[in-house]
Amino acid sequence: MELPFAEPWRIKSIETIRRSRPDEREAWIREARHNLFNLRSEQVYIDLLTDSGTGAMSAEQWSEIMLGDESYAGASSYYKLKESIEEILGFPHFLPTHQGRAAENVLFSSLIGTGNEGQGMIVPGNSHFDTTKGHIEFRHAEALDLTIAEAFDTESEHPFKGNVDLERLEAFFKATPRQRIPLFMLTITCNSSGGQPVSMENIRGVSALCKRFGVPLFIDSARFAENAYFIKVREEGYGGKGIREIVREMFAFADGATMSSKKDGIVNIGGFVAFRAREDFERAMTFNIMYEGFNTYGGMAGRDLGALSVGLREATTFEYLEARIGQVGRLGASLIAGGIPIQKPCGGHAIYLNALRFLEAVPRGEYVAQTLAVELYREGGVRGVEIGAIMADRDPVTRADRFPALELVRLAIPRRVYTDLHMEYVAAVVGAVWERRKAVTRGYRITREASILRHFTVELEALG
Ligand code: F0G
Image (cartoon, rainbow, N blue to C red; front, side):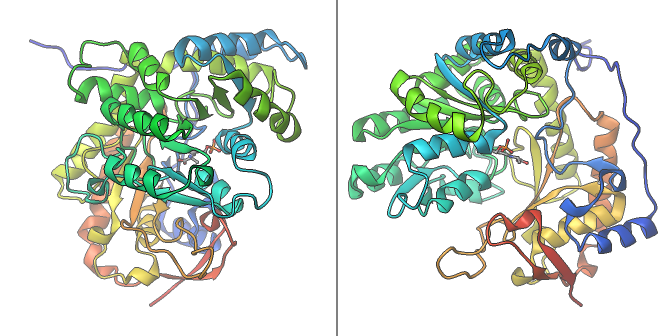
């Protein structure tokens, strides 16, 4: 008999969470103006808002917190991280930043500009994350999404829905003057299309085109280890290779990378931008010193650099990834068994509910995914996040709402935090809303919003 799977860790420290009453949640969500970001964490039972910065650190990581060297220059914690980055990702140069978007800010300041030099420039990629897109548009440049069409068909079981459409990329490169393309940004896994991986074959294809047309290739590596796991288990020829070996191969194609360490670094805060060429590193250094901090700490405390050096090693073990992605997959399988429409196959860090198929009666202009996210909270205190028209912001030119191909609610699973019983509870909450879905016919109207990244602070009024 084969014994069942179980996690390769045990729990040393716990945090109490409380289930609330429906009447409490009704009052709290109204007070929050129907924006889940406005809730206090005590008002949430299972928090699946994000897998970013919410992971549980290991005893080894906490030890590094105590060993943290807070020297302004040349801290030993910096050298520990440098060694991990060099060994695991293969980049000889890096600059620490306070999180992923800061790494984007430094990189784009260096490659695009700090003012409106971006006017007329285009940064192609595969469904850029919203802060990446925000930083590109802030510089008056354009983010061009070249993700394969299958990514937007939630029923397609394509194993690598983060892949770039290479034909469209080649056509774009042929039609566009080189000086208008500062870089290509490849996001692995691709968060916006459902935590979907990019295959090695596709990374190789993107890299070949970038080389042919002389465009630098940068990887947004927030969830690079999860991407490597999917390559190992889904791509032909990689089953026998180790995670570290796959990671090295993925990054060998790139000129550099941005990293939000809050994901696959399994730390609560931090990031970096890494480079292969010394001159790219030196150009970006000035911006890092101005925006983040001196080169050997950037936006991070010494203790956090140390914890990250260990987190990168832990995240790139097969045993960890099998438990992590397995948990996400089990939640997904239980929802699929209940007939609930989700993005298939399941992604690495989250389950994405297809809100357009879930709440079919709610009009598109009334923010369908947001409506579903609020219903999950009302039902059982589960907090997910809208990835739909609110997150897509308005068109920078016409100022009209942008309606993306999909309206999704993301249930992001923090790393090493919740048990499978918590996940069964989540599945039951989603199931209960699914049961009463036909009664949900109206959504929301925006009463207040910011001009960019509006989903964080938007205020909404219930319609009907
Ligand atoms: N790139 C990707 C793919 C991301 O998912 C994120 C953040 C960032 C960059 C920016 O990193 O938050 O450290 O500044 N994603 C979080 C999420 C916020 O919830 O998915 P950051």
